[in-house]
Amino acid sequence: RCVYEADTIYQHQWWLKQVVDANGFALSTTVPVFQWAFGIYSDRYKSVQDLPVGATLVVPDDGANQGQALWLLQRIGLISLDPAVEPRTAKLKNIVGNPHKFNFKELDLLTMPRALNSVDAAIGYVSQFDAGKVPREKGILFPPAPKTFASQLVIGTPYLSQENIVKLKQAFSDPRIQTWLKTTDDPLVKDVLVPVSAN
Image (cartoon, rainbow, N blue to C red):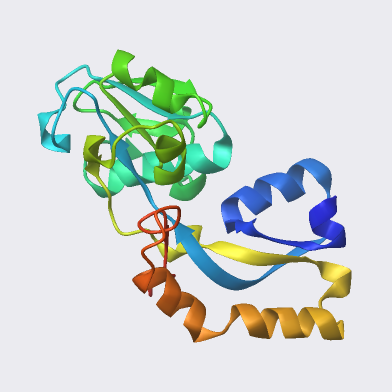
């Protein structure tokens, strides 16, 4: 509800859809602001190619981010998803090809760092693993973040034309934001939040 009455920059379109479907809020995306770095981590292996047959992989337990994890695995050729399903919202039940016989477990994103030493790999946001004190060197794949998962400036739909909202959209459209994301050395931001990609 606070998003409906104010705004946020922390939701990508697939998470927003999940929120709107569950609550019925009238919300609109306006400007893509940044992208969350997302990848695969492992305590046991140095590359995705090293993952053995039957490896246990952890994916997020919420629908929007589970889709992002499964779509990533499909893009790198490790699984196949039902072509009738939008891949960015796919669930485990939509896996139709699993040639490596991976075993999948679902966990809350915040729990993943603590579970990393008990599984073969986990797929989630760099920010969550950083918060869990997992070294970046444990990341075995950081693919370019697709624009479809860019965090947007989200506004309550009835307020879109208000003068202060128009100014807010202009501020977040300033190209200096993307330049700062690209060049900053802030350890809380560098390689955690990345500029909005072209694709």
